Amino acid sequence: MTFVDANVLLDLVTDDPNWADWSIAQLEAASLNGPLLINDAVYAELAARYARIEDLDAFLEAAGLEMVAMPRAALFLAGKVFTQYRRSGGARTGVLPDFFIGAHAAVVGIPLLTRDIARYRTYFPSLSLIAPDL
Image (cartoon, rainbow, N blue to C red; front, side, top):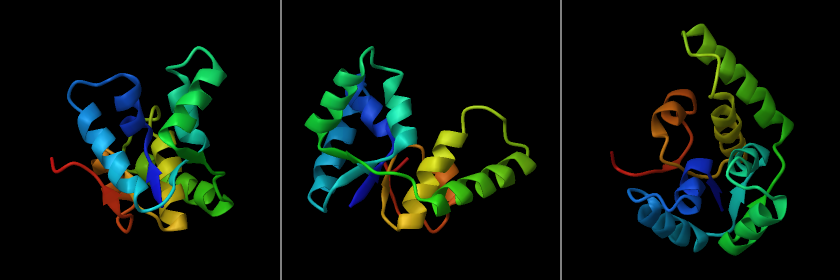
């Protein structure tokens, strides 16, 4: 199993000239190891790019993505990590979804496919990341 971050999927949706090929290759490789998972936070981030829920759901189905609910332990961990982030001077906006995603992958113990490695390495050091060599 592999948990997939929204930025990787947005590379496909937007046909990002710098990252789409990398993201497609990584998704294909990860799919060989089992299901590709997303949660509510990833779904919501993707929804910003779609006018209709049916179109988003069709994309998820075509990409072979399975939506799973966030466990309470992941929600709790996300809140604790967000508190740590804020106490260290982090901005109030734009990061909570990343903490939901990282906490979910960490709690269930599966790798996270992402391009946003710095925050995940900082706040979820035990989380296994599939990420580009930057």
